[in-house]
Length: 92
Image 1 (tube, rainbow, N blue to C red):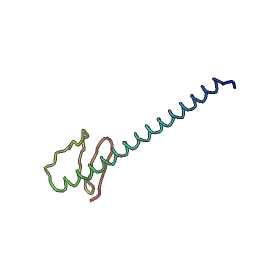
Image 2: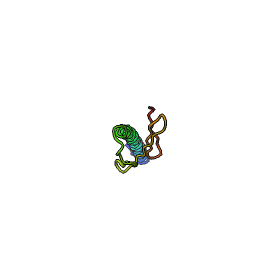
Image 3: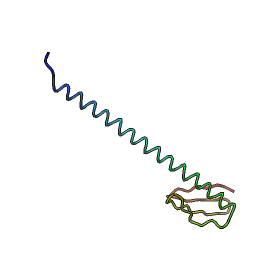
Image 4: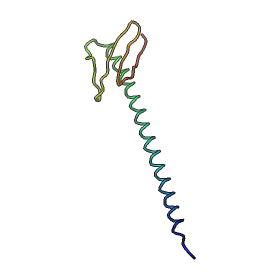
């Protein structure tokens, strides 16, 4: 029986590209999950900063948590925290 080297090469390249596609998909999904966790961490920290400002006036502004600067501001009917271009606010 004669072997076809081209067929083995094609099969190997197909398996390589499928493996590469799976790897790139996993990297993308993991990166998106880290971005989502980062957003949730910012929201939770912002809510915590608002609660800290409600309890005491001696909280520094900006407050730095995990190398991120959180800026607190209070307007007429809202409490607001800005971090990395995101704004989290709670109405009074």
